[in-house]
Amino acid sequence: MKKEDTVKLISSDGFEFVVDKEAAMVSQTIRNMLTSPGSFAEREHGQVTFPEISSTILEKICQYFYWHLEFASGKDREFPIEPELTLELMMAANYLHT
Image 1 (cartoon, one colour):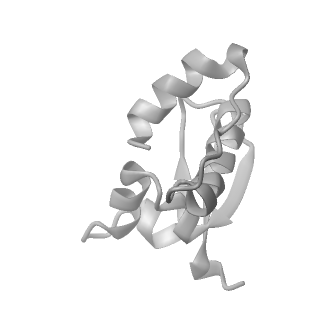
Image 2 (image 1 turned 180 degrees about the vertical axis):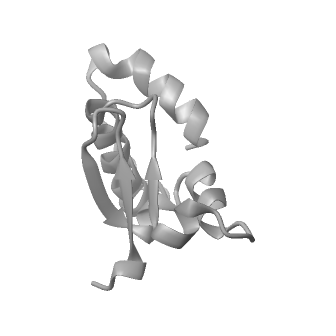
């Protein structure tokens, strides 16, 4: 896989998640950061830092990106969310427009 086909997402606690660019584009916010005209650091380096999102939450978000690509188009399969992560995931999803 080529570097330009992936995106590095960095959590507030420094964990790095390398995901397929197609999966990351599920998020409207990430899509805008990576495709907007101009010389934004995110676009140039292919990485996005989330200073307010912990690694636990960002990992779950990355799982959702892949789930969305595979199952969101009509298949009846729920995305599993642990109850203790619900509030933080809702806040992150609101920010990421997922």
